[in-house]
Image 1: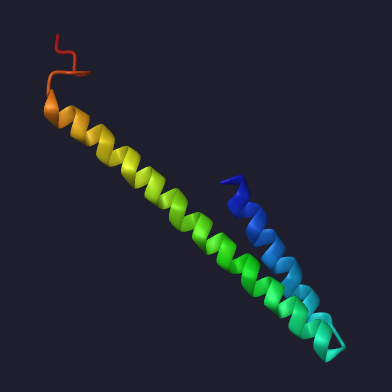
Image 2 (image 1 turned 45 degrees about the vertical axis):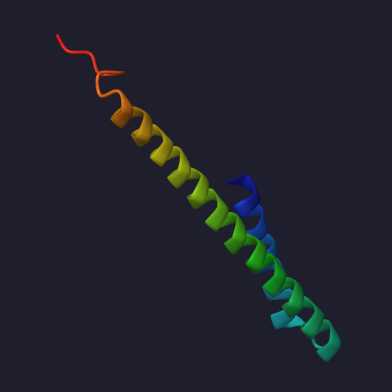
Amino acid sequence: MLSLQFYQEQAALQQIAADNATLENVRERCQRAADTWAAFAARSERAEKARIEAASEKLLAGLSENPDQGCATV
């Protein structure tokens, strides 16, 4: 999650730089950088969601194979 936050911060910083640039080539460069950082953030977020989903499925699959495992009854 730390990398996602970093990517989002970098995208925001580059977007601010693009918005404030007076030279066209600098504005374009900063906009490309902002778009790239935003893509990194999106990819990181998708990967994190996939990891969580895979872990959940693995946990559920383990419970369905042995319904008594991990469930103590008194």
